[in-house]
Image 1 (cartoon, rainbow, N blue to C red):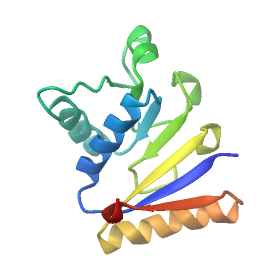
Image 2 (cartoon, one colour; image 1 turned 30 degrees about the vertical axis):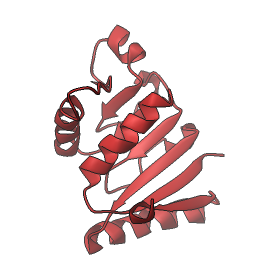
Image 3 (cartoon, rainbow, N blue to C red; image 1 turned 180 degrees about the vertical axis):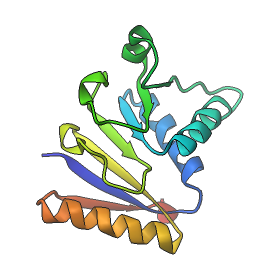
Image 4 (cartoon, rainbow, N blue to C red; image 1 turned 90 degrees about the vertical axis):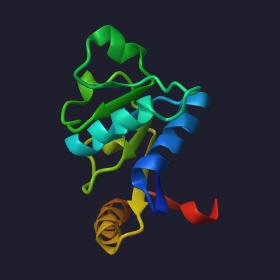
Length: 144
């Protein structure tokens, strides 16, 4: 069964996402990041500029197949067709809604900002997973 974890109270979701992806890359995890096109564009820029010494290989889901298969991190705004994704280890959801096909991943990480609107949307996603019997854990970002 897919493991669901909510990372709570990110004061800057984009910065936190970059740190999390750096950690995932160094631990050799394969991650699909689901978000809005605008957020993914910002994330792509942030990953290229994370630091002068770090490189976090990633690509968009519409990249050529050889690049897609070689990239440990894939950015997508649409995972309707799971067949086009090269791996299903970790799904990092930075979108407002539950990602379709999440149950095909070993693990789902939901990043929740510290704004009330973001928390309200996260409660809806939590309820979705809970009603389907998925075990849910939390990680308080400010306490780590």
